[in-house]
Image 1 (spheres, rainbow, N blue to C red):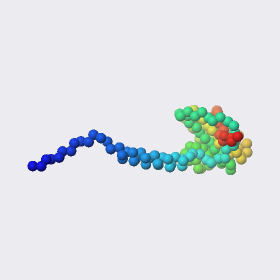
Image 2: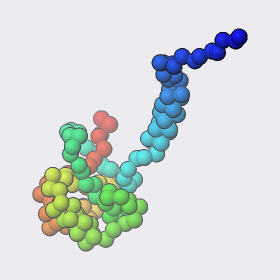
Image 3: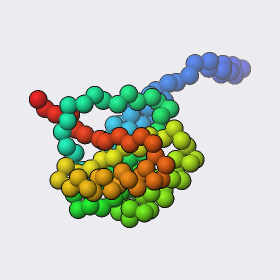
Image 4: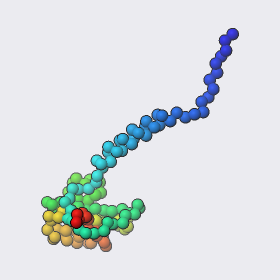
Length: 140
């Protein structure tokens, strides 16, 4: 008579497959994180200014002006330039939906002063009370 071997239930979890999955996800995030930079490439002017205190629940709306005078808004489709009137209308809708949004302007340093002032005037007409200007920290 042969003994029937009974398998006892195993009460341990094999974590090796989970570690493999975690390492693969880590590599994927490390590779894709630098590719997810947002915004329009703008040559910002240098200034001696303090960095903005950023709360985790605070949101920003960034309006960019490239050196050719084209306007961009960081609302999703950042590669399509928008006319100035569309910037004002979109900003008005965003501000009315969420008044806590802070508006920042990124203007190329080669732009004439009047182009930035025209944008700021349009943003004030859209209901923006405080507008921040984005600069690069100076090197010296």
